Image (cartoon, rainbow, N blue to C red):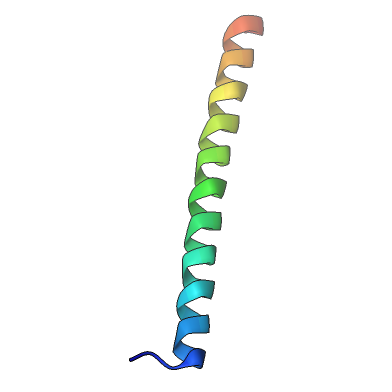
Length: 42
């Protein structure tokens, strides 16, 4: 059985992982957006 401290660490780890994946998605989207702009104006 997990104690409270381990449970909190697990929750924090899950939150950090979801933030990281959201950031990666945003980064890819922004690169895609910039590439589209360069394609339009280039």
